[in-house]
Amino acid sequence: MPLNGGMNPDISCISPVAGLDAFIDTAAITVHFQPIVSVHSGHVFAYEALSRGPAGTSLEPPLALFRAARAQRLLAPLEAVCRERAMTRWVDAGLDERLFINVSPEVLLDPQHRSGETRRLLEILGLPPHRVVIELTEQSPGIDPTLMAEAVRHYQSMGFAIALDDLGEGYAGLRLWSEIAPDFVKLDRHFVSGLDGDPVKRRFVRAIIDIAHSMGSQVIAEGVEREAELACLGELGADYCQGWLFAHPAPDPARRRPALDERLATLTRRHRRPLEAVIIERLCTAVTPLPADASVAEASERFAAEPDSRCLAVVDEQGIPIGVLDRQRLLALVGKRFGFDLHGRQRVTRVMRHAPLCVEGSASLDQVSRKVTGRERDLRDEDFVITAAGRYRGMGRVVDLLQVITEQRVEIARQANPLTQLPGNAPIRAALDRFAGRARPFIAAYLDLDHFKPFNDRFGYALGDRLLLVLAELLGESLRDGDFLGHLGGDDFVLLLDDTGDRHARLADIQRRFRRACEALVPDAIVRAGGFDGVDRFGQRRVFGLPRLSIAALVLSGTHRPTSFGDCWRNLKAQAKRDATGRVVARYPA
Image (cartoon, rainbow, N blue to C red; front, side):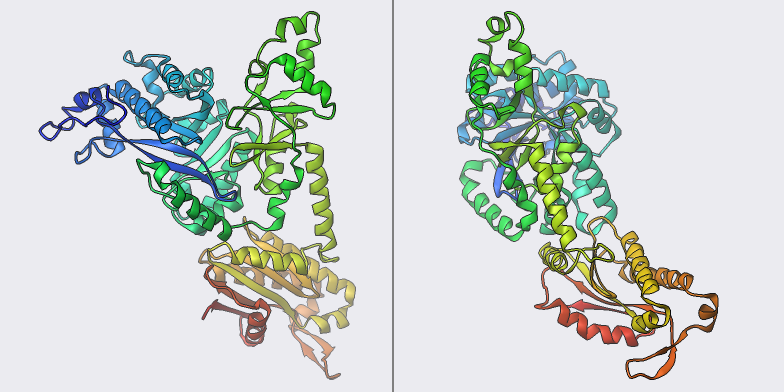
């Protein structure tokens, strides 16, 4: 079978569907590779192999190709050819990232399926199983979830990592996900497309990512085509991304790699996270990992020589973590009578815990915390592995993570407004920088109270403080996922919102709710009178209306930002106070 570059058969006179078995026999299949990337670290994590039918025929598109194979009961031989060609081409390319290969679980019940062929091919090519990720994909309707679970166990038993494709597309995938924790889940492109402008999709994606991380799975977002989608996925905690924004599928990934690396470097600089987001770097402790061929006896010697090490990572020859060996687990094994004699010569891969918790060094503190605390209760104190582009860097300890979180909370509290405990000046400036660098539209609103000083003078500072606390509470209740609220001091607040098109309705609703809250705090007679007697800044007595919330809002495109937000707000504040609604919304640039 000419899999390394032989001539394709002459299919010009063959009906594409009728000749399907003919070009399967002669391997008239081309393989393209699309990268899976970590933009925050600026590296390629893996490639997905995508098979194509004969060029110039109706079977060139993958969906048509596999649909025809399924109809003619040729799915098993077609997938066998695709896997063989993909792995062979991958080895020929000389790349050392992981390789994702699509597999339909139904082929396992096909009489034409030859069990163990994939493992034998890997042995011939010298490719270790843990560098191959079996991506379970399902195109035929009504597939039994039990069959898919059997497929997972089948490939896991051979040492392959597992990915679930198109997560969220149907009930079967969600049911399988709940039963078996895969190494990776691929977020369906439906949830990615337009994510930056759809708050409902963002809530779904946030929930999916949180569940995945709690189960020890990493999330790959498919179909990323725009930088605004990329920025949003980074904020929500997606681990990796795949899509046309980075590269189209191509048959020659090695030749295109320099251009891809340059593209990723540009995107990384453009979407570099703030200092808080890379604080996880402080948690990394350089601990020499165990090689995959190390013995239990050698591991015991390492633990004896390093009494402070609770866990040791096990890595392959490429530095990719494949497991974790816990000191107590090892001692329980060799500490028994004759335990060392029975197990000392075994490889650590026989006794390690597979699928270790790995976090990228560029991950946010919040993301790492969610992953660590989301583990099963008996694993929450176990050290975790810190990686760079999927390769081992060191170990992290939960106690150090808790210390960093505590330090961060103390720093936040130090910079918070003493009355409302909302973020103060420095966090507000950082939030403005973060929103301005996300490459998607947002609203930057400055809020303050009309007639607040006379209100304080008339009713006392205690009621004035109570009014500010009520305002802070209702503003907090109005926040959606990803929004920001800060308190500059006095009666001045800053609200940063994703621009979802309902800006006027949202801001007007906040004003109405504040009006009702204010009326509830003062005597009914004041409400009926529509105001109160007070003294203005010139010492003159006059009637003031109840405090009104004025809003000066800038709508920013995401590609332009003002030199000074304060100057822009200052020009709008007077307009807002004069406006009957107490609200001005202006675009920047105009």
